[in-house]
Every structure is written in structure tokens, then in C-alpha cells.
Image (cartoon, rainbow, N blue to C red; front, side, top):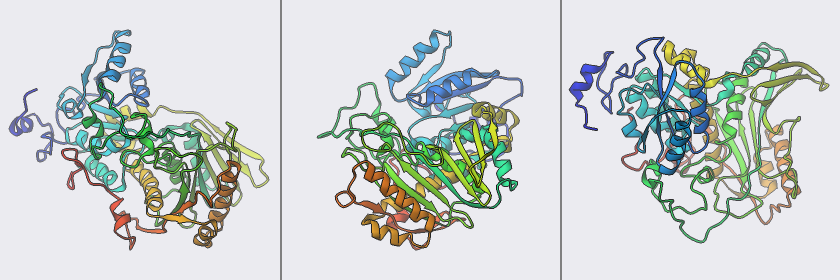
Length: 483
């Protein structure tokens, strides 16, 4: 495709404004022309969650799936063949930049590995396209804020993929909670008790499948040899591309925690404790982790447990009957959220006093906002997604700048936070049931990190922690200082 000149692009622009980094303006040819026209969507990345994006849009009236983009030719070929059986034809791309040159596409839906999320959002906004982006919306705190800035600057509709925000049950439960239905909040607990086995251990560099353009797949991350058995999915458990289960499954629950708390900024202080226990493999991220966000007057306490209830079993631990979800502790009882479409309130005697049921369609909500051109119509605007993602990143930074410590040292670090100490005692009991000896495999005690919630920068944390708020980007896949 031949390049389009700056002058030609400006002539095609609908709205006023300076030419942007990729040549398109904020209200360009991708602006939806009318409420009755089809919204033309492209899905980027569909080896996993992206398949749900494809099916989600295909179910919606007035939406056309017109393009697919993935650096793996084999993945693309399989999906094209599957769509062809239903007489659906799509354009295909390996490079997101080429897709964004397609003037007919109104919106992109991003389900790539985490390290690509923010840059794709920024590029989409600069290209005059709206975007749905999977959770977490960023790989680090800094680039997440840049994605928000891009959405605002170019007046784009950007939905974060934490779909619990579209749940009718959770909306009703939050209204009940915020209306004082259970009295004053004491703390909010996020739970990610999800089985995570070993990813194995290799002796050397592994071959890249020939169908994959590894340069494009790697994008903003360092172009390093593959040093794990599987390229796909197990990228979650290494720092250059993933954020551990805190930023994988846990971001859903972290978002609900912050929603319950009503927090409008990141927390002023964070501490994390954890480790990778029970096996020796090529993963780097913790499979067992506590994160304490020191909000006032009520903190968020987050727990990740990747090992089973005890060694040899398949069942997972639970807290108040919940393994993956949120428990909100209040003066007059507690609220449990254990699924996307249900929640329940209990009094102090553990009697159920209220139930909330009903789901929702997060993709449909995104399309509705694309038509209305109002970001306020989104159930989870990119700014909401950024804050919740940032809470996950902050916890991981605390962990990554920490050091191995004995249980007594960890208790000492938490002594002013009784509920955190109680959580750590459960952490210890869980590991003991899985025959993990912390004398042989010590836990990591992270640093207490103080944050300026407005600037989203650490205060007096040191260069190592500050550096982990962002990353060095590999050219040309660079998140710009000015979007």
C-alpha cells in the first residue's frame, strides 16, 4: 500500500486539529458517519481470548468483522478457514501498522500479549480508530497513562476489557454497597485462587515456530531468544511480556476491588510478599502473592494462590466460599462476588440477606459508545482500566525490588496492619499444606513503596523501583513521551 501524504490526510479529515503521529486526525475518515451504519471491526491477536472477541462482535447487529491481525500465520489461517465455513470473508494482516492504514476500519479489538496493549491503543487513537483493549490495558504504569492521554487527545472511544463492569448483578451490588447497605467498609479482599502448574524447564534456547514473525510478536519487549517450552500463553509468567497472575486473572478482581472501594486514584502506599513455590521452572513471576494497597480508610488486600488447597489435591483454597472473586468486609456484614453474574450480601451472623443476579455484554456496550461518541457511555473507560491495571503493576514492583526474608521479618514489616498479618498467616498455612519449607525456599518481602497518586510516581523509592514504572522500548515499537 502506497503511503498517504500529510496534505492528503488533512484534506480527508472531518474535524479540526493538527496532523498526528501516524498522519490521521482525531475525527478522521474512521469517524462513524451515522447511527444506522455498520461498525467495521478488526480483531488483533486471537490465539486465546481474541476468539471470544471474534464471536462477541459477530453476534451483534450492525457490526461487521472485516479484518484479522496476528503475527502467527498458522493462527490466522485456522481462523480464516473457520470463518469461511460461515461465509465470512475478512482481510488479514501480520503487522498492526498495516492494518491501521485501512481507511475502512472503524475500530480494533486488542487481545494480544500484555506488552503490546498500550502501544496498540495509542497507535489506534492516532489513526482515528476506536479500540477495545484486553486487561490489563498496560504492561506498566507509565504507558497506561499514555494510553489514557491518547484516547482523550484524539477523542477516541476506548473500552478496557474488565467485563465485570458490564454485569447487571455487580452494578446492583455496588449500588447497595455504596448506599450503605452493609455499613462502613473495613477492607476489600481480592482473591485469585487459580491452579497454575509448572511451565517446565528447558536447557537452552528454543526454536521459534516458523509460522510466527517473532520480531512483530516481541514488539516493544527486548528481542531475546525463547527460553521456555511454549511461546504462547506462558509469556504471562515472564516479566518482559507478562505481569503474573496478578495482571492476568487478578486484574479482573483488582478492578472490582477498586470499584467497591470507590477509589479514584492509585493507592498512596503498597507492599507485596510472595514467591514462586512448589516447582522449579522457567517462570519468573510469583505463583503465591499478597499485595496490600494502603488506601484510607479501607485497604485493598489481594491474594494470589496458584497451588492447590494442599499437595496432591486439585481443589483450591477458598475465603468465605470464594476462590476467584472479591469479598468486601463491612461493619454490618460482608459482600461476596464469586462470578461475573452473581453476588450476595451477608449479615454479621453469615445469614444471606440479599442476592444480585444478571450479566451483561461488554462488547455491545463498547459498540453502543462508538455510536454515541460518548466515552461516558462506556462501562469501563480506558481511564478506569488504567487505574486498576496500575494497582497490579505497583504490587509487582514492590515484589521485584524486594529481598528474601524469614517469616518473622515479614510479620515485622506488616505489624501496623493486623489484617495483613492475618493474611500472611494464611499464606504460611497454605504453603505448609503444599509441603513448601520457607527455610529452604524463602518468600520475597517487597518494599513498602510510597506513591504520589496524582503524578503516579513513587516518592523516595529509589532508582530500581522508579525504573519499573516504565520500560525501555525497542525501536520502532516505542510508546511516545507525547502521544
